[in-house]
Amino acid sequence: IRICRDDDMEQSVKDILADDFWIMPATPEYIDKGVPYITSKNIKNGTIDFSKVNYISQEDYEYISKNRPILVGDILISMIGTLGETAEVKETDGLFYGQNMFLVRIDESKVNKRYFLNFFKSNCVKRALKGKQNQSTQKYLKANHIEDLIIPVPDVTKQELIAKQLDKLTYIITLRTNELKQLDDLIKARFVEMFG
Image 1 (cartoon, rainbow, N blue to C red):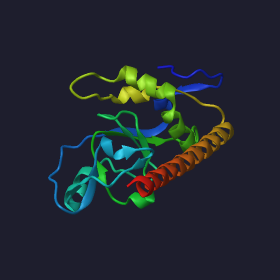
Image 2 (image 1 turned 45 degrees about the vertical axis):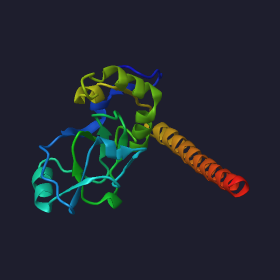
Image 3 (image 1 turned 135 degrees about the horizontal axis):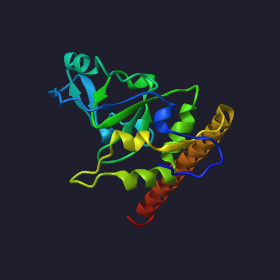
Image 4 (image 1 turned 30 degrees about the horizontal axis):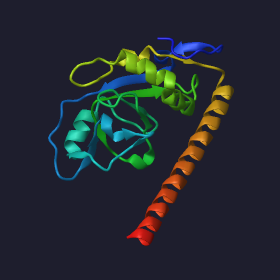
C-alpha cells in the first residue's frame, strides 16, 4: 500500500522489521493485584497508560509470554477499537502483557525507530489504516494491513534528522498545549473569584 509520496527509496514495513507478531492470547483469569494486563485502549499518545488495567498472576504472565515476550524497545500497535496508535516499550513500564496489539521489532540497521514512530503518526498512515479497517461490530486491523504499508526510507542520517525535528516539534506542541490548559484553568478560577 503506497501512502506517502517521496523520492527516497521505499520499502514495505515488513521488509524493515526484525520480527513481528500478534499479541492475542486467550484471556487469562484476572486478579486484584499482579502483573498489569493491557489492551489496545491502553496505548495512547505514544505511551502505555497503566492507569486502568486488569492484573494477572505471575504464573499466567510467564506462561503466556514464554514464546512471545514483550521486550524493552518493542513497538506496540493498537489493532482493535482505537487503531494504529503506537507506543515504544520502556524500561520503566516493567513487566506487563496484554492482547489486541501487534508487536513490531524494527531492524535498526534499516530504519531509525523514532523515524518509524513519527511515520505512524502521519496523516497518510492514519488514512491508509482507516481505509483498510474491517467494519464489523468492532473496528480492527489485520497484520498484513501494517506489514504491507510502504514507508519512505531515506538514508539513516536523514531519518535521524527528520526524527529529531519531528520530536522537537512534538515537544513544543505539548508544552504549548499544557500552557494553554494552565491559562484556561486560570481564567476559570478568576471567573469563579469575580462572579461566584
